Image: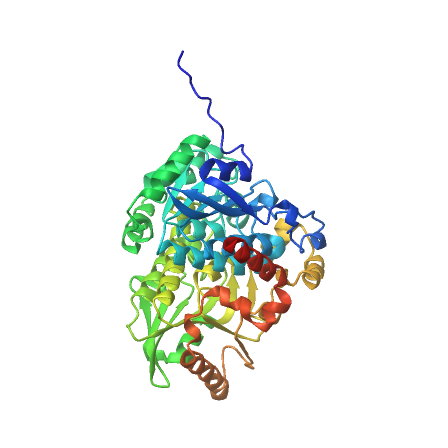
Length: 254
Length: 262
């Protein structure tokens, strides 16, 4: 009898399960027993979480010791505040052989506004610095997707792996609808949103590099392939190429 | 004339100011301060911009790319001065479909890689510094100055949007800001996080006196001579101000640095 492996959904996995699936020998830094949580949420009437919604540590990928980061999209929309942001930046800054970042985030945490934006500026710089000497692989495969300031961080990574069910953009559909009105974007029109910003489209555009199914083993393979790839040209950030694609965007809907 | 355009002209002279190639909403000025070369860059409104959601000075698709090119294409010996007066990023369907995150990431990438390659990067906040627009234009600078003025505002969302999202009254938003200073919008509170290297008093941001201008030029020239334009964003945590106001971040960073060594 052939053994047909049942897919294990990455989107349904917890952040720690996600990291254990994607890197070998994951060791967490500042685990929940360290009780590192946000001191800013009580004033907003919110309950803090003992990892601030960000899991970080070290792991191994293709023989290298890498920084491993997973953002918990289930805690305040995967938002980045002072503590979670510092966890990510510090993990990337000292990572010896590259990094793996599993994004599942709406961006800056509104309740910690300006401390969040400072942390994301540090994260962006840490990615640029690390990327120059080792691969930094982004995985966007969670329910929230990757939005706000963290979409800039993801776009700076060496490689981006996405699933079809994940989305990547600067402003989420709710934000666009709220700021520009329902005629600009209908946040309830889910098929249209995925058609515009989902993983399949982002890979077709060259905004992300690889599409994988929502399965832990398949994503782990895609991460290994990305980590071993020699190409570090970051074509996606070429202004010449982007300008041509933005000119085309004026022509109408994709 | 907006604050951004005004301060480019004030610092480097009317004659130096030009539109970025094909993008009138990005102003670029090459000139000298105290004999050394500088390039100032600002984003300004363009009521006829081809992308309608970016006509009010927001960072849109064209603006992000023009900033990236202006930073990368600066004369080799020039320091960059980002004049910050940005109400936010463009909110639009076409922007999201085309990949606005990449336009802004291209600007972040240009500022960070140029700084890491040794080019001094400075920012002067003269108006609004909101959200992704500030991340893409200003926050990668090694040194940031700001006007101490009520029209200078740092936040992650326009004030009206915060009210809509949180359903809080302006009074409630103000009360929370006294408990959680990170949610305040004024520059004096933001400066307490150690991210602002100098605050400048001007009686009128649209008509600074020659003495007020001279004080800013002196600070920029001095900061450049001291090599402060190439500092990484994380060095802001080494300030006395940050030690007082960002203790949770410093504690986390310290413990993770030790975890890496063990």
